[in-house]
Length: 120
Image (tube, rainbow, N blue to C red; front, side, top):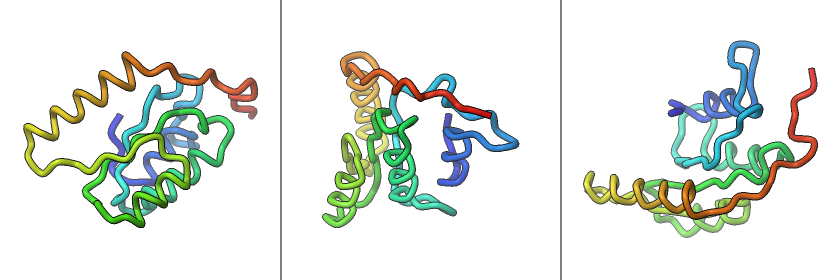
């Protein structure tokens, strides 16, 4: 799933009245850009890592920012990896391929917390 902005990403993951949410079948990894409209990537990361239902989902910050402050803030908020996007399209697709192989095929994620179900 590709979200166009931070609000849409959070709506997809946590659900809203119009979106059922992904917590019943959470994503195995989240690729997160810091430069998102509406709600920025750092705030999305803060909410993901601040909620017990999503805290263990690996979040890879994949952004054009090479700023040290963004790097430090991302790791302090719980990012599992920080990747500066290559400018060249072929390099970019190779990085995405390698990330996918690692996070989806090699990495063993933590089990979901016992309280990982939504209550109505």
